[in-house]
Image 1 (cartoon, helix red, strand yellow):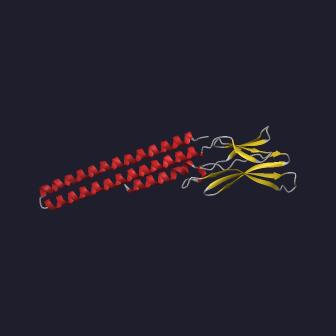
Image 2 (cartoon, rainbow, N blue to C red):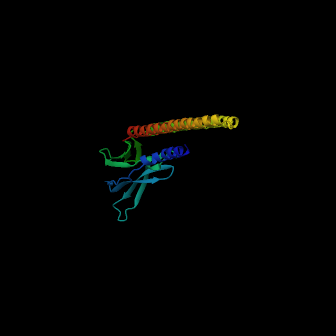
Length: 225
């Protein structure tokens, strides 16, 4: 049973890493406007991700940086794979109203006003929705761990009580050969009962894993851009 618990714990911990695989930021063609060139850069730490707009003067032979403007700053959820939370700009284009629009891979759109270099978000943030989903997953895992703890505690108690009863029977009837034969049969019955319990616990672990993977796939599908 300890091996089953270890396997279950390992799978739960590594599942998010399996879903977390993603490619590096896409290479975007810079936008030139009034002698200035606009590019996107990222600064990722263990706690947050910042996307910045780098503005350079391409009329200068040395291409001096003119300014550095924050496009967005996203905080990461603790204890979760960073790669699964990071987001990148996958498209940028110049609009007719002297602005550059930046399209993020989670359907968020930002706009840089080229007249005053102000940035605004054109879409509603999904951060609260994603945080609610993560909170539900964490609470579900806590509930599962609580149920699993009580299940194991109860199982240990049942086995200890049954073992104590068997010990008392052996002490009382160890000189009676007929009873010893009966006890031997009862021991086989005990092993059969314990085997059934082991199968039941293994089945509980298997069903829990299947449900966990199904929930993760549904959440991944619902949050797919």
